[in-house]
Length: 388
Image 1: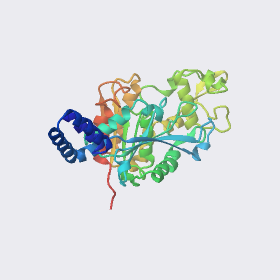
Image 2: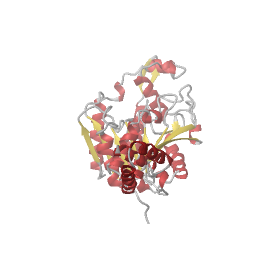
Image 3: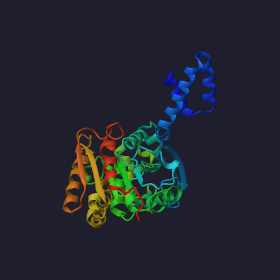
Image 4: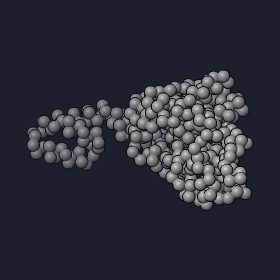
């Protein structure tokens, strides 16, 4: 019976419900027993008040925000400039005036902020890390990088959207103005998976003045891989006969490389896709356009611009990425291995790890890559307190 009494105190203290409980209690036990248990109740609450209060606030909240992007209004693919943003605020946020570091997370194509949070695995991983003192509390931001085609490739394109500018010039100021953040590069981190991992690394390469730590989960497009672009099996004839993106069909590779062309070979004078292509028609045959291939590769593959970004990357407090050995596309594995070698040749300190398994099921599980690798890395390199 004493356990139930203590439970009541833990939830309410000595409020009206507790008094009512004691009245009922007296009907069954004599006064001396009641007085003894009443004393136990007060003793329990006094002793455990701090722990009880802490237990009540162990969960953070997810806030749904949105704003109208001026930058993304400039596009030719029908982007909606009203962009959603999901913001996770840690357990202590609403109980203090503290300011927090921010981790910006970039989802991959086929994903969205809603999907990231829908099964609660993400918040469970973060809060278990807080509870176990794996990392201090931070704000977690996941903006919407979806599009009517396949989603952002994290580039600046007059056709498919200036996504890097959107992130730097609109998203970060929006978060800083709306929430209590540490407004310094040392307290801002970048993270993402697959194409979102590419985005995280690209922003580190181009905007080290705003961000100081990056962790990319199985990034793609770090380099060429095994397959030459000239040999890609893409139905260029069907693509160039199509009048809408839907007419391209369901073949992912065709849809993907049209999006790559819109991002890195924009041509505002060439509807309906407003871009040039790797292969162009010549006397009824589709032949490689070497200039277009090289231009697109230079824009899309991170290794192609590593030399010009090396100085930025050397200022980062921490750089890390990982990849699963058994990706069905071995180009991704090879490219990440090569990217790590090129970083080393540039004298850029970083952590790179190839792990045993596929890259699709290892991130947001109980002992997954986020919990065992990404969050401890941020704990070591992010600044969590105001700098004086």
